Length: 304
Image (cartoon, rainbow, N blue to C red; front, side, top):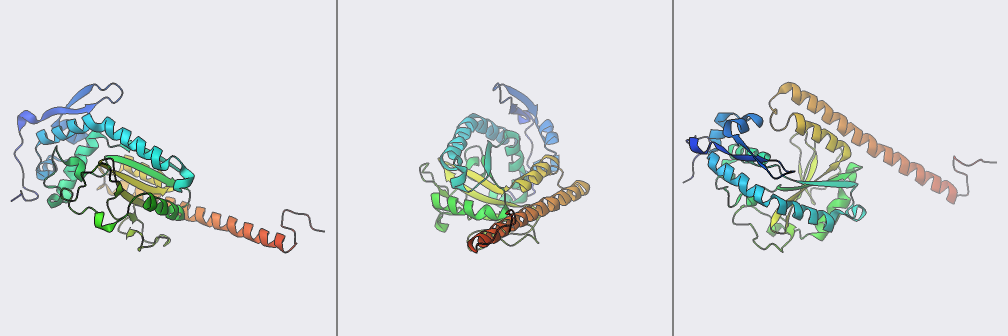
């Protein structure tokens, strides 16, 4: 039987100090103790204890991830080159990619064990990469929200999208074959209630339970998961500011949440206006083509 969620685990004082950060430019290790880590990531001691994972195990995850981060970065680079470098073919405006920060990895494990303990109960230094699907993260951007369908059609064509392959159990369903590339979860879109209804729930799972807006795809690629998030440039602007100020360390601060919500509304309005702007342009061009076909001058021509 596993430990019940919320039950405290004794802290091994000898393991409280571990190597947790490295200078990525030089590769030199820096040390930080448990309390400094909790303070930096705004984690209460009670929440850390409730997660039920010894500090020693978290430190071991960190060190293993750090040892493999260079390989993961190269896998992300390969993915971008193989599938996203030709942005017109991929149906996107631009892209960027990253590997997860080691400290954020530990913070996420603690948070997920508190939120969904049963699902993350057996995570450890040997299998964490089977649980955490965004060690390699890629974002693709669209000028217009409705352009999502072009990227969706592209990515579900170049990668196998078989529901029988969708991962349910992170351990038992993990495909150990590094040459098998496929979509590992049903594609999802997070939208805000009131947004223009442009998504087809036959193609993508639609979630409307917050203000976050983004497409999510999980791809199994070269032995690891790659998470692709798709959003407009305006949505990305809001997301970056919200992530820098609010999420996940000040998500309970009502004032900051109110400001973030307001900014989110403005970004949504900007997207709506951009789409309307394009529809006006397309209608204008269609009207002018019709005038030319009918032998009548367009508005930029001088009539007789």
